[in-house]
Length: 213
Image 1 (tube, rainbow, N blue to C red):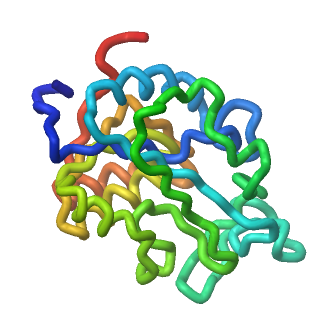
Image 2 (cartoon, rainbow, N blue to C red):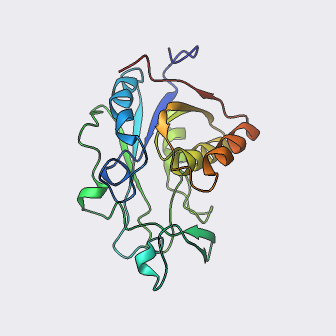
């Protein structure tokens, strides 16, 4: 049970981007990110199906501020697909920052989905790239497996978790956000905007940490 929800064969835990660069000492560290790792490990044992996502950028990715002369991290540019926040270089393919947090222990995960590897398109969502047209293939994978309800945990709540939840919902999946097993960047009101958006879509948020660590 997670809250008052029974977990069954058609449920999947989607663990979003628990990687070194989003945790303590990383290039884009999310406040208090490390403390959710043991919670996610324990939570994962309640699920028969687990999918991990991994941000996986090539060097010089279009979303990196360093790629744009004179630009600084957290400025916004207009990309071909719309507004794009510029980030510090992070989760570069094959580098330490792209590795999963060393304490993440989910050997039973059935899929590792890498995203953000197209040089010109960022990817927050585990389901669609930021152009909102290019699929990652995750929706099809879940349909083929008969997995119809997605529980989300991970980083960052107001970016990759949010957009994954929204796109899962639009794909026809049931979605639950495990709010206490996520952490947010909360830049420019992004956390409040996230909760408002999820509420408008009818996506529930519950506590899923299964007790104190």
